[in-house]
Image (cartoon, rainbow, N blue to C red; front, side, top):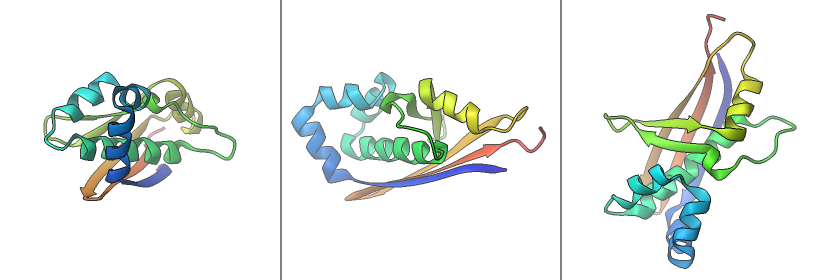
Length: 133
């Protein structure tokens, strides 16, 4: 059963500006070291950073409730599996929020889709609870 949905669009040019203006400070505030290593290894790092930025926003929206506050930027991170498919790793406040919205005795999974077409990057997240609980 679907228990959360979120989407976001990010202007890649905005991320390019943030990287140029704030550099490492922006990266350290917003992205995990693993995300930084992945993005910095790409030919166009800003595109990868923008997709991950959109993913963090989409996951935060999917986990949001009427009373929830903001998540820490690094509480949601994106990793690609060997096939290139993006997967979500949550920690801290995001993990607590996922547990709070997941029905008792159920497990939950976050599905993520990322896309870009310069100058935009998009992310779509679906939080699914198991149906066998």
